[in-house]
Length: 381
Image 1 (cartoon, helix red, strand yellow):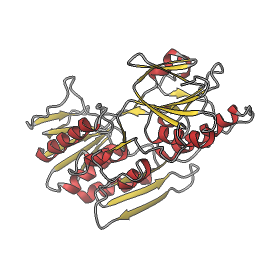
Image 2 (cartoon, helix red, strand yellow):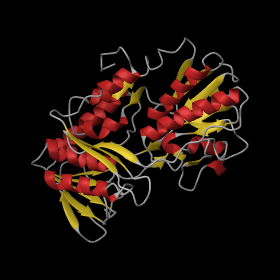
Image 3 (tube, rainbow, N blue to C red):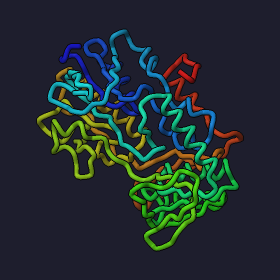
């Protein structure tokens, strides 16, 4: 592969796969869009909390890349499986020692959550096995404590209590509000749903997590809180923490990695280092004013594709910039209820929200399969 013709995207989740698509649309005549991804399959992360609870659909969370870019001309795209460990001015180095040269580079590496928010496995069979084991742990447990009142914690708590109404579910959150990055109305909505389902909420308290972790053998134990309170449990799910995967950039531009670990970027989504205008960061790993979500990330992907296209054509001023957007989310609140929510545009405004109920649980990932693997109907591939 010629180093002058590669536009490399590192990270094959929602945002990275979109970036490759947009880049190939714009520049397939002159450049190859190369995706570097460590996992064998696209991982449908939004369904992970549900598939860690509800059995029978976990295989749909892992979608093969074989047809993701079939609509582009031959040679317009390439997928390299590997873990990026180092970034240099003209190449990305993988864990196996191989190098992938680039003319432009887009880092879409995202963040890592505690399983089951993200997994430590890289292939489909191992991922399926993890979910099946977790489902059995949930099924066996009687008293479940979930740590963290963000989206993953709320979704898992409501799914478990909806699917297994006889179980005791306690959700512990260190802040005064669930979903605390959003307008208080979302806390009100999630709190009301927790009450409806019979989920016990403990707010403004922290769990003391043992160094060795919590038992998973089915035995009972006390979950100790900072307040001194103890909650009896036989299974604990940790749904806290978001670690940005910015490490590979440290070899090229350590100054572009903020103290938080996220990558500092300009409004054009170029990294905050004038020495490397051809290196971009998008999505969750980028330190922008946008909420960490797929929708603003998809917008990042389009902006970067258009900016790289402009630079290839010699047009560097002005480049497109990302816009400030109110945080929004579409999340489940049990098997048949979900909420669409968007913060107001200013402090005095009112949020938008829409609660919806369906007749049947939304457990399938077929829409994502149609998007990422059009034409494939064998969901075990």
